[in-house]
Length: 372
View 1 (cartoon, rainbow, N blue to C red):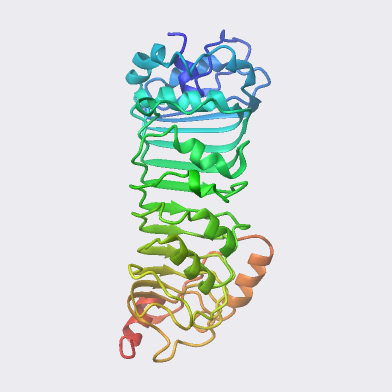
View 2: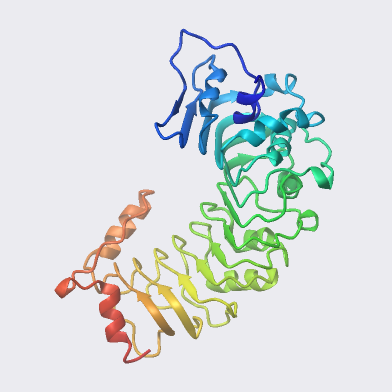
């Protein structure tokens, strides 16, 4: 039974319980969600035993370094000793955060989790230290994740971290979220093709920009990509975004560029042919950009600085159009958005005061169909 809490806490070994401190872990009454907060200076890691029945597990390490546990658990060469324990776990979603983790320990955990039924893994506020072990044999890769989310995770190998991490995951990842990354300039020649990835979210990376997007979207590595989110990612021009997408050879169906300060000129933009949904809300646009795709299913221009209703010919053929929160619908909306944005707060989109309880989107759709 000794390795159980280790597996639930980056495979930390079971330590002797302390009766002087409250239990850091709590399991709900339905045995679904278990949350641990090891913020105590000398945390009782054995409390993680409570999380054995849970389906969703959150482990917050309180900023502790796990270097001391690397010598106590040989997870790289002796992972089979953990196989039966891992197979018995119910966990499907695991979140680990606020720790410093030696690379061999982290990658060893991933390898052992290959025996689990884990589908979603989230790493937040983690510093990965040290040198990674050699890549595993192809038949001994890690968990078969559907979703991997990384927020503020630092890696010791710069742009090579994605390709290195990829070696420890089974193929088939469908959703990849990377926020507040220290670098997105990937070593593309080392990155394997994400053949099943349909959703890529690079939001909350304000230093990315169009040039960084070219480096992050490794050419022809995302053939199945359908949803691309770039909220608050330092995008400045739609033309630059178009060029990056074309260079990478991606054909997203849905593109989210909200919360970027965008210029309206897109006359030379060659949009992906598969694109049918475009989110340009909260981008500071003062007019409808020229050169938008000729036809869209969804176009979101809400919460911008449009001072007049779009004129005939300015909009593409669109099924669902959103213009809520623009100054021509909500007096004073532009000033409010600017003040809140300058203060570092993302404003909520104010509703349009239209009669009969009708939303601004629906009303404008009805009025716009005459000239779309």
